[in-house]
Length: 228
Image 1 (cartoon, one colour):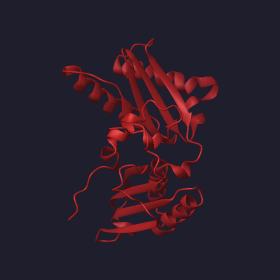
Image 2 (image 1 turned 60 degrees about the horizontal axis):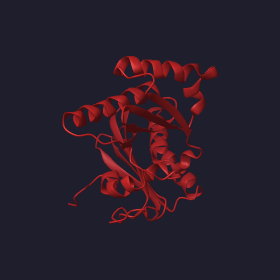
Image 3 (image 1 turned 120 degrees about the horizontal axis):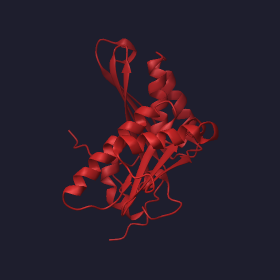
């Protein structure tokens, strides 16, 4: 049996080196950028986890792809990467204002030091998280998993991605015995550290049980800012 490791954790050092890059891709930078020592580290880490859980639960239908958190001194900067920015902003910014107020009230944040911004993901076919969420939504509607996966493989193929792999595992189509199905094209070099791989895993609650969805997208060897 091969020893499995997180795709993102395997490239953590390279992503940290790219955290200061201005035009870096979402997948080439870490989800959290801050430094802490002692007891404050565990408190801030737990707050990051709860912030993401709250935002994903609140914006589950707004195409939320990633939540990036940056802390500098007392300032907190939260960046929401989404495929549907209009749903989060709302009419005249009413939705995002209410969302910021709820964040400040729930987590006891400072209004002056908290900043909430939105960045649009213009091509959802180049985002593993967006693809995994769309497949999960389709499976909940009892769509045939093979047709859904093959359609997304075709979309990914024509979006400039060099390689992709989609794995769907569980009681597929309500079968009594769970199994795994794989759909792929091109190459996905998961053992190459400099390879820029976008990875996402989503659990889909279907009528037959929980189905796991994994998506790997290979975008080329672009993690080159890393220095020893």
